[in-house]
Amino acid sequence: MQYTMKKPLILSLAAALACAILPFTPIRAAAAPVVSSETKEHKDARMAWWREAKFGMFVHWGLYSVPGGYYQNKKIGGFGEWIMHNAKIPIADYAAFAPQFNPVKFNADEWVKIVKDAGMKYIVITAKHHEGFAMFHTKVDDYNIYDATPFKRDPIAELAAACRKQGIKLGLYYSQNLDWHHAGGGGAAWDPAHAGDPEKYVNEIVIPQVKEILTNYGEIPIIWWDIPGGNVITRERAQRIYQTMIECSPNIIMNNRLSGYKGDTATPEGFIPPQGYPGKDWETCMTINGTWGYKKDSKKFQTTEDLLRNLIDIASKGGNYLLNVGPDAEGVIPAGEVQPISAIGKWLQVNGAAIYGTSTTLFGEECGSFSATEKDKKGQPVFKPTWDWRCTTKPGKTYIHILKWPGASFTLDTKGKLGAVTKAYMLADSNKTPLTVTMDGGKLTVTLPAQAPDPIASVLVLETAAGVR
Ligand code: JFZ
Image 1 (cartoon, rainbow, N blue to C red):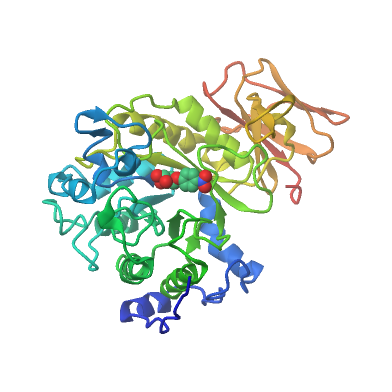
Image 2: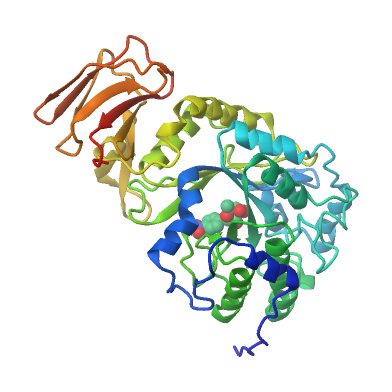
């Protein structure tokens, strides 16, 4: 295949202004894939808020919330947001969902309040998913929530305003590769109307829309590309997309799903890497009920216990947790999703110090171990997690998240990894009543209160000499 080099991108006035007001100088390599000229100090500064945040809300919301998993009275398998693909819905028929999409109950302030009450610090919402429908007021065409629906509002603009007001960061998901609506986009082979020129698709849809989402809504600190691979986003096109991004928003955090770029964050999907990814920034994204986009029938929600354990497990391994909700066609986040995350928020109000801004466990063995005999589909040994406790750390503090209350005392073979403990108390105890600590060789014993302060996870704080992690 032959590629023609395009003229250099001309920065829009808005983009230039957006760049001018950002706090750091744009020293990330503009077009060099994988290798970056950015210094460690610069990257640390750019990533600081994200590393502190630990917990965010993923939102998959689009036209797919209208069918909600059903097409022509048939239940369609797979993820809700994949219904167009899985039911092979012709482009024109799918577009007919737009006039039916009128999410009048959408209230950005309420959504952001749900996020805040959950103790989440950021949102990543689908600006455009594989269906190709823009959930913002794009000017590239009418296939967007402002022009094509009776709703006539721009939820991204409303969320950006609500997030700014309530101190939450707003990130945007953008499907650059798959686009089942626009000719030339990836992946809609079932409809001949989709055949087209990928170069035209990238030039006329992707690049202008990336500029729009990164300049029209104030600073957008995260872009969540999806998905790598495919024939549409060649290396050269990926470079131009990257360049557009970096010119609009030099300090943006991007994931690893733009072909050819490692990005800033790894994105394990639906699982927690058994030992984290040491030395890397990573974010596990996960659904609560087996689908990203809304499905009328997906009512089996994970419990608060499952989700809170995941958050603690992820923090102990140095990652972030991006937990998904799928609002319905009226703009409401299902109650089955709000309930467990708000319960996590209550726990974080008491125990947040043991999550936000923490570093990884000092130990590691407490997470479980690889089976000596069982192998997964790829022939890798299966990891068997154990759920007695987890550990997170801050300078001078070690937090033991006790998941299975051991009774009178907590004991641990520190193997010399923990400094001298100067004080121990339960994080839930606002009086910090000192607990008795004995250290016998490397064996630590802490006398616990009679009752576990929390039925799911009770945090024991071990204060250690300053300088020891
Ligand atoms: C993608 C989307 O297709 C899906 O609809 C959802 O948005 C999810 C968060 O991301 O799904 C993927 C993408 C990448 C992989 C698997 C599923 N992957 O790399 O294994």
